[in-house]
Image (cartoon, rainbow, N blue to C red):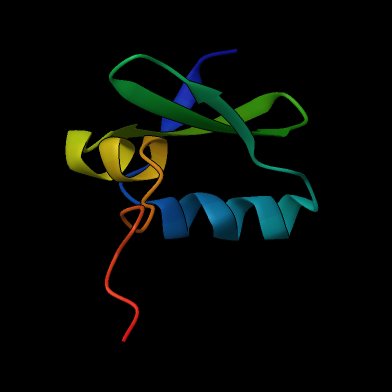
Length: 70
């Protein structure tokens, strides 16, 4: 079966709700793919990952050691 590519994640979420199915996520190096399997039909959504968002999630922010304690 060929996937029906949707234009928004919200549309995919609505299809999942209507089908009472889970959204499956495949994380790629530059693109994320989301799928909903509804019997013979497959709905899909493709999202480009923002590098800044990934960097923020991958980098832990900590307070500098030995800061001012007044």
